[in-house]
Image (cartoon, rainbow, N blue to C red; front, side, top):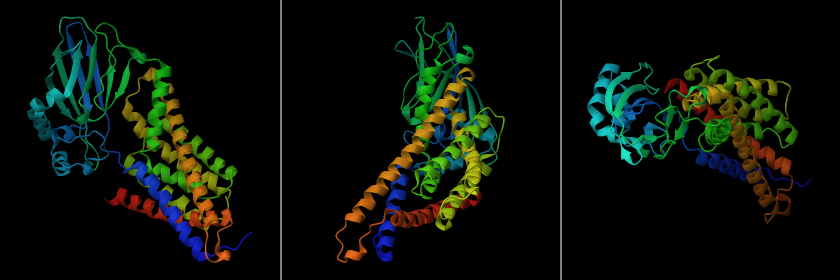
Length: 398
């Protein structure tokens, strides 16, 4: 085992840890949960369409372009959004009704190339006292369909963000499509209802689960990196990830079925503190202790509640819940494994570069991967703990 200069190891490890955390920060973007897909429930007959849309209507009235946006705070119209969000429910309902003339063209109903304009029948704003959380509005629309007996495609413009279109009347197997970037739904029949296979739902939700980790799940990414930084031994890493997976699978299912419900104002700060804990333990621990899997299991339960809040926004049809849940969970696991794989690759490349470095002093060459990993682990864990502590403070007090 070669000699390792502490100053060289510290410098290399700090730069490596900084680059690794920065890499995943860049990949994940801002930690945000405010932009949610709208949900549109369509009821069709031979002559008419009835459309009920549940949405965060302040973004539309403020004129925010939601395409690719993660948080309304990042929009140029953020101040106007906050002003609208602070309005009493009844007053905002009036603002939405007054603005509908400009917003009407954003909702797209296509009947074999003919565009159907919908009338606004009613607006209901659902009370949400916490101004830090988005407020839902429910709008009822209707319109006459052309006499061509064609199927109908539904969606809206990309600037309005993602939307889930569901056709009523199809039972548990009714179509429920997640649409983004201005995409339209599958053709929906006027008589009967479109359905979607369990396999199609399963495959689609693998992508949804992966997307929730990379690029959107920075908090979950940092937690997984915290697990990675404990030890180079694959057995210990697999033990931790397996325990975490089992735990968040349990609460993901329970919370998605609304058997267990805990406010996000409680769950989100605790998730941030879980990141702090695993990072701080990495700094002082030498190997895995018996209590580490137990604590990680508890933290996995918390993270499962966080995952469930996202899955619940996608409006899964009851008959496709199991397929969507399994697909989502597999996507999450693939995302977590991708995080570990990238981290391991970056670490290997940097350790190799340090090992091969042509330093002036032969004794200062970094020869021991375990010593380098320990230095990287400490530096990376300090950075992760600082980020997690800031998030915990932000989610409680800001």
